[in-house]
Amino acid sequence: MPLSPGAWAVEMVEGPDAAALLGEEIPAESSVGLALHRADADALEAIGTLEVGQESCRALVAVADAAEHGSGLLTVLRAEDSPAFTEADRERLDSLAGLVTLTLRVPTLRSSSEIDDERGRIARDLHDLAIQELFAVGMELESLVESLGSPDVTPSKARIRSSVATSVQGVENAVAQIRQIVQSLRRERAEATLTEQLRHEVGLATAGLGFVPSMRLPPRPSEMDAELPGEIAEDVVAVVRECLANAARHAHASAVAVSVSVFSEGVDRVVQVNVSDNGRGIDPSVRRRSGLANMSSRARRHSGWVDAINLEPGTMISWRVTLPTS
Image (cartoon, rainbow, N blue to C red; front, side, top):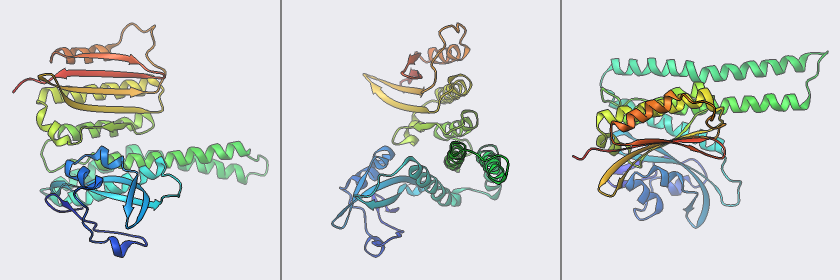
């Protein structure tokens, strides 16, 4: 966690090396130190090995936002010859990092009414997303228990395996949804930033898709929030919302990825939104596509364009506009 501006230290450790690691400062020139200094979440989460003393360990890293104090991280270490970390391990660690983030942010809320509003929103999101998923898991397991207890009907091994696999997936979905709910918590500002609105849209889309879409933002999302004018920021949110809704209604996909980036192109600054899925693609027999027409209209207002790109399998919607010069 942040120790002072530009410095980080190990604040909590559990395991055999706890005594040696607790209180150690992160070397500024190390891969972790450099990524923390740049607030580069992608680089931190891409770290796969870390040196602990003289030993190289497998590492799984998740970023924790410490509000005005900066960014920190949670790390799980394994012996180098141990099995690789799984996606389920990633989801569990990200969920824990989200809870740490929530704990660190609560003191920044300005009044009890704001905390009450956040509690109400969290309760609604939990009910509509994670609790519904867990309720479905309960029904699946209850049905399996009844089948196993029936003297007349013995479920096959395939039926048992399918029920257990479905239930495990449901629990993992619920964990991922809780992670998204935590990450979408609003900060102390009266109005949500672009980053917060995007996270909220991704969280809301989970119910319709049946899984949590992935989302990638610039390494410093707050700089994007400050750079994009209000009208363009509103269009970015609307485009992401439209793409996620289309994927839920038509794509029959098992994965959706959202990417929002801001970059220089010659003398211009450009914002680009890419939303891709692994579904069945765009039906060529459908002539009227109101969603694409709406996104195209939003792009033209800012001298931009939108394109639908066929993937194998699936589709990618790419929307980009040029930012006005200051």
